[in-house]
Image (cartoon, rainbow, N blue to C red; front, side, top):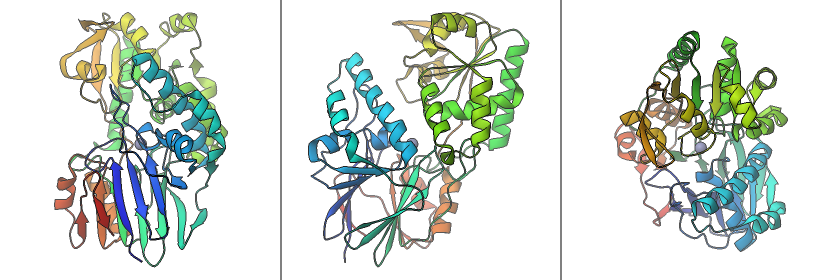
Length: 409
Ligand SMILES: [Zn+2]
């Protein structure tokens, strides 16, 4: 049986990933997300599909699932923790795009109406789709992140986003033997610093800031990064405050202990750190030592309130912990040392440092992963520098489809 795939988005770019699989009997959709930019970037409209498998709760992989469920009555599968976190993120996406004044393809009512369309699929579980068998494997990356193994005569592995190194929060992904590997390539051509060295440098900077009487402000994405930073910082017993949506995501992760590497550590750091719940809480946090807060790219959220207060304080420091997209406030700060506070660009006097705490496999990790899976064909997607990776893959057919193009696999 010939299988074909088509990317509805996220082939040659990062964001709005969606991959249709035509297996001769039916169509299946893997991931369906949008890019949370201003304005948001949407994938091509999906045709009616009965079933969708989505890999994880990041919006660029999951954000269009409610549209799919409400429009086509699709049943969407993912791990229990992914479903719980996604519901929170879907609601937040509606709120944020409404605030920003952009049109959005679904609303709260759609969400309520499609709740029953979201179904659990645990790691190691296999589901039948006609002649196909689909099995879920851990992808590292963030809690609940899944790779889908699709099997008939041949095996196709769809990775979603993967990380192969162990982090404080999750174990790294292990390769799965397959004939065709559909692989994300976000970090193609780029290499991460050594993880332990990075953690050491970060903690040293935070320690120095606290010792000179400043506040260490750590902007972090709510999903995954906030918890990773909490776990890391807890090793040094700082007076740690946590603000923003990451708090709710932490509670979700705590209630799905099987999804994290060390649930006891997560429970402990949540107990030992202090949660900001009000403006008074923010004042107290500013008298503490370290604040982990959203948004990770400093485009709104509580981080702005803290920046207003520490921007002019040379004792304090802001430590950026993830990739900053062009056009965001975090990128502006990183590149120019200026920050946009309510429409006014201000030169900051506090220390600014960047740490590459990525949750993605880098160039060499991806090559090792490919060798471990040992496929005949590699389909590269979800990356802007796919050629860099393709050039280093030996002895295998490498395909780099564009959005909309049908590919026989
Ligand atoms: Zn992701």
